[in-house]
Length: 83
Ligand code: SF4
Image (cartoon, rainbow, N blue to C red):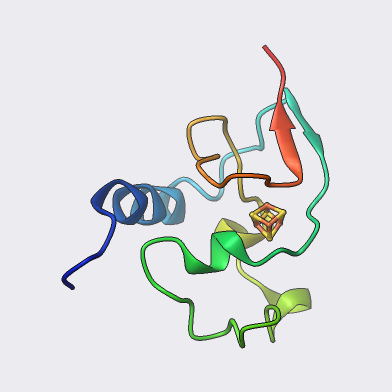
């Protein structure tokens, strides 16, 4: 896995295990379906280059992304966090 962003990979693994927890109350905005979070650490096999092919059935770790400010490492995500 040469070239993999270790921080992004760690957060991706972490968010799988924390995906049943609630979304932070300070989160605002909405997903604009840019696909950036589908490519964190490695390309998701369900991302076809234009979008998620299982969007309506996507798992909680994708549905809730970014669940916390810590998870929000994508530039220009449609979600932001207040203080
Ligand atoms: S990075 Fe943010 S705006 Fe883009 S697809 Fe993921 S959740 Fe949606």
